[in-house]
Image 1 (cartoon, rainbow, N blue to C red):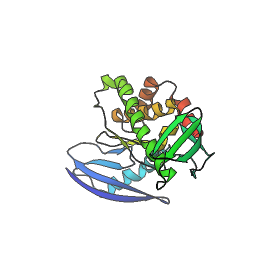
Image 2 (tube, helix red, strand yellow):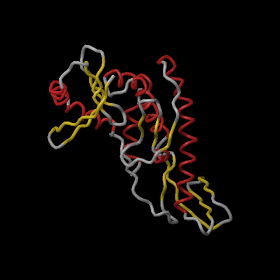
Image 3 (cartoon, rainbow, N blue to C red):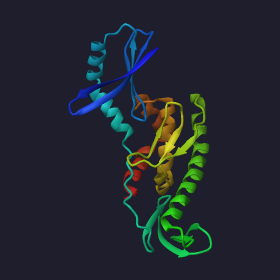
Image 4 (spheres, rainbow, N blue to C red):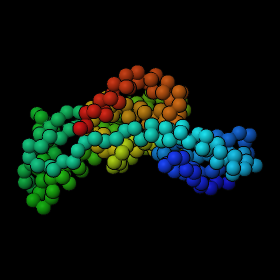
Length: 234
């Protein structure tokens, strides 16, 4: 197997793809959740024929990449001052901070109460708390939803939290699910939707008909939670 990276122009867009020569009869193109493109070609295929095929499928490739990038966090920047509203699991909380001996956060009775040391910023304490809650909740959701995929022969993935400006989640070719810590601010159903979406990608890597049929089967009301996700964090 020989692999190399090529590029083509499609209008004002540039598409980069990894070209892989294999012992096969037909040329195939795959777009992966993180946006990478791989072209699998028979070993005797000319570069001209490969470029022609990629250009022919360019519109479809860009559509697939845009589908994978369809989640985009909308939460505006926060100043972390008293009286400011903050979201947690789809509910709004009023921030209330005070100087204390330790750094801790409690969410109750509509308030996000932050105690912080004098030399620690409120923002630092809150973001650390969000990430801890995110990891805890995301793993809990994974443990519950992975049971819905037992017959699809996929291994339970690792969950990684990574700040992303344009995405709620993604999964790697090797089967790791990556989620945006900001997702912990969304309703529980929306978090479950994103997790199921990524788990479905472990079965079907692209947004094919089979992918959406599986997502519909696992979570019939996914469109409702996708819409809530897109409009709740603003």
